[in-house]
Amino acid sequence: MKFMLLIWSNPANWDALTPAEQETLEGDASSEHAALDVALIGSGELVVSAALADPVTTRTVRVRGGVVASTDGPYAEAKEHLVGYYLVDCESLDRATAIAAQIPDARWERVEIRPAMDVAGLEM
Amino acid sequence: MDRGADIGQTLRTLAPQVLGALVRHHGHFDACEDAVQDALLDATVVWSERGIPESPKGWLITVASRRLADRWRSETARRRREATVAALESSEHPAPPAPAVDDTLALLFLCCHPALSPPSQVALTLRAVGGLTTAEIARAFLVPEATMAQRISRAKAQISAAGARFHLPEHERQERLGAVLQVLYLIFNEGYVATSGLDPHRVELTSEAIRLAREVWRLLPGDGEVAGLLALMLLTDARRPARVRSDGALVPLAEQDRRRWDRSLMREGSALITDTLSRAQVGPFQIQAAIAAVHAEASRAQDTDWPQILALYDLLAQSSTNPIVLLNRAVAVAMVHGPRAGLDLLAELDADRSMSIHHRLHAVRGHLLERAGDRVAARAAFDEAIRRATSIPEKRYLQAQAVRLANHGDAQN
Figure 1 (cartoon, rainbow over the protein chains, first blue to last red):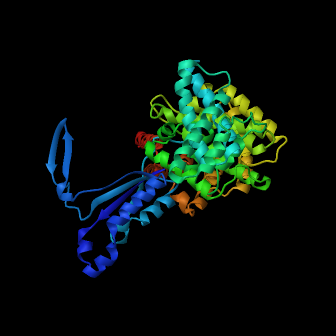
Figure 2: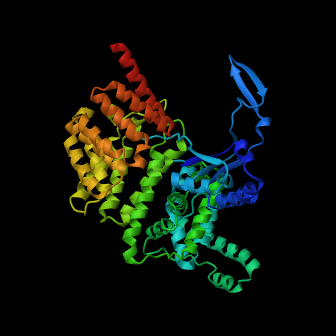
Figure 3: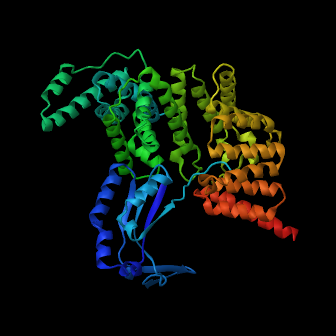
């Protein structure tokens, strides 16, 4: 079963922390991400993962009446934005939860787990 | 049959026999499995040019043994393990005689080792016993080939690390057989739930699971649960032509065009389960097959023998706390004693967290509320089910139910 692990960030929460708290929480995040990538590749559970650039780099696209309109910048002034994601294919929601807990950002931001829609279905 | 399909079928039948022969001779399941995959690829190329050799199994064992020696040699170049190579070379053409015992079971037991997670057991079984390539397995499970390759190689390493033996002691065989049957059923379902048009690759998993279940049944004809699983697969697969419309939409059992059911599969499945129930110790797969057989007997949905189905679910619920079993039992209760009796049972399932977040509980509640005449509550239950569904075809089906109820309500007002 495939799960998307979405890493949400709220910069205001982070800015409210003292530098000492930030240091304790952050630990060595980039090497932890790298290690998690290696572990998930090794276990055959990683489909894809990526970190996302700052929201200021967003381009938003809409198609209305066949006309493509694109604007630079995010859709709205959201407090939170996506900073990265892991798509994993694993045994269960519990396993996905265990993986999410290893994402360093979970210590100061939050990680959301969403099941990916399947194309298969049971008789109802 | 064209030569390609012929070769494919031959290779998949022989794959576990060749792997079994190698592992018995050399040990090292991990290395042998790689060598057999190499030999299967060699065979695909060579046989399509020159035809299938007279003794395809001997050919494969010889080539796989050479591949194994090659692998050990390059390994040894790094690790200087001269002794191993010498031992392998002294048996340059080891091609052990056709084994008196079938190694397929021993391989299945190994692939379903408890150290592995179910997805890993499934992947390894399909490759080592089913003879499928990593690319085929990856396509069937809609993951990148690299992901599947890694999953398989990790699984093999875990088996080695767990010190698994090729031949299980007798007292562990029965327990492991249960894991094997679960894995075969997982493979079957993975293929069965695929809806047509969206992904034809997964349907092959259904026939592969049936082929492997037949193989296990041939080896263990006296085991009631093996026969039960095979019968369950046959009876379920018989409904496949009727369970999905041409546009990929799911058709519930009650609305299926039963003339499209595969009668010969139903006959085979029904005969098998009837015979098994009369002589074997009863188990969950047999009961589920018996339930499928009762459905198969009804030429119209309204002719279904629900009291019989309820009696079978009662039996199943005695040995299973699986909430899906309890949910299905609630449906049977509703069919026999009315929708309110079924709804009372669903209320008990609400307490189960794994069940209350599952769309099926809400979908069943929607159906029963509608039958009880409460369309507003039924609509709300279907809306909840729609939000919880993680399958596109199931979501489409549930949306159609919600729309139907909304339209019906408008027509009445």
